[in-house]
Length: 191
Image (cartoon, rainbow, N blue to C red; front, side):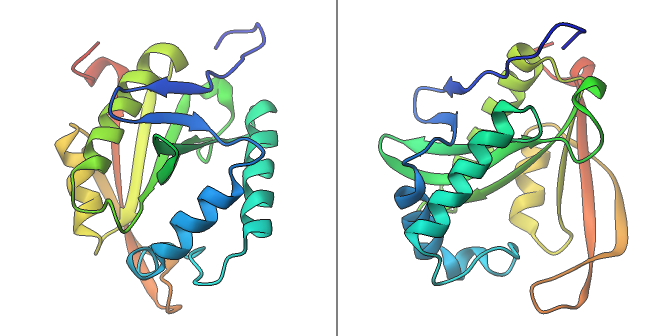
């Protein structure tokens, strides 16, 4: 990520799963995964709805694909063959691409939750992010009550840097705290 144009990598094959950019036509898979996982996702994901249509899901995928190509945000799907098992991404919430900082967000489908998939996906994202992407700092944020999400970060060597108190609203509209985890390229075991 220097002064020359940056062309974001679009896929990472981890063997067990593939992490790749959404593309037109992925809407049906997103709709199936998101609606089947509604009860699992709803406590933590404001966007989760029980009735998301295929058309809405297709719009989400196409918008994500466009933003990816424009280097505005890098939303990714987690694929086990033809099954969308979750979503993730390298998000530029902390500043422009040139800062080489990304925030990883993630959701795992209800059918795959508790299997360790999120931990393995985050490990793959760190390897991909610190090599092919050239990130210098990768963050992970989660609701302070989401113990499973915090454990995924800790298992992958991210350090909790702090807790933002009452910084966001939960799905019920109540104030909630957010844990911030991060790892630097120099701290990553593969460095």
